[in-house]
Length: 132
Image 1: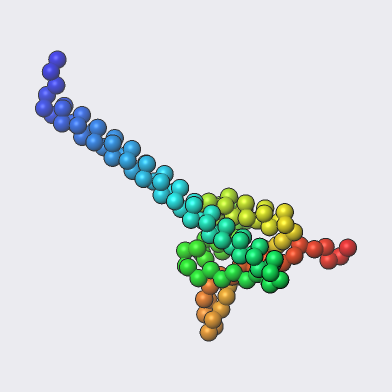
Image 2: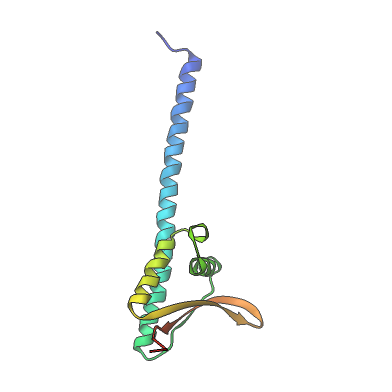
């Protein structure tokens, strides 16, 4: 049986829609991969700065002024349960585990300039037993 022009056009439209959806999925996956790499790079830079500062006898204070990165750090730090988690929360948890394994405690606060929130500030403190 020969397909009508309407059926052939319908098949073509369905194939194009399927291809468009497939391409969008590929693009979405690539965007997620890039976003994850960006967060990993951000956290790795913070970790390397902490190591460098401590090894050179300084107290690490990392100011993050880029709005999206600063917001992600604050939200990742404050995530209390699964509903509060940010995309790629596991990148932050890996950083927290690294700090814990190195006897460090991470703190995230606001840095103020002229009484306005200017940046997110990441600091660390030694994890020591105060009440031995």
